[in-house]
Length: 183
Image (cartoon, rainbow, N blue to C red; front, side):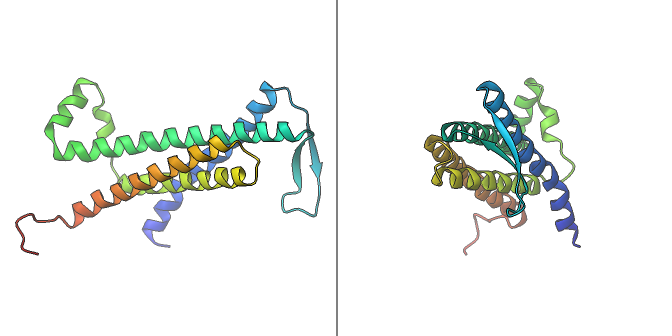
């Protein structure tokens, strides 16, 4: 297995675990907050044999909407934090004034990173896009409120743009464009 694939797999364990935990926590939060009755069923005909069932359709939509919203908020917050760190890291390498500002705000530790941050940004944004896809699919099936699906769609577009911008910044480091060149 290549080193890049090995590092990517190591990085992807945490986002996968956080996706699962935030979805389950959102479901738990909805069930406890609205005092919903749940039932556990075991049917062998489905891929997942253990199922949680809620008796009313409105409660299903509410519980799924809350769990999707928690998932979206958690993944978006973490991706925004990682992207902010990446932006500060790259800006501090180019502009000494950024380092002075970060020192005044006591945030110098944000710009020290041993490994390339691009791979981490790439993996986290991919998991955010997977979360957005799940939320949009739930919205299209009518299992989540539509405003949560629209928010997931907009978040996906913004972070896809951020990922492309990050990729452009990394490419610029490898192949700098010479402004004085004729071609």
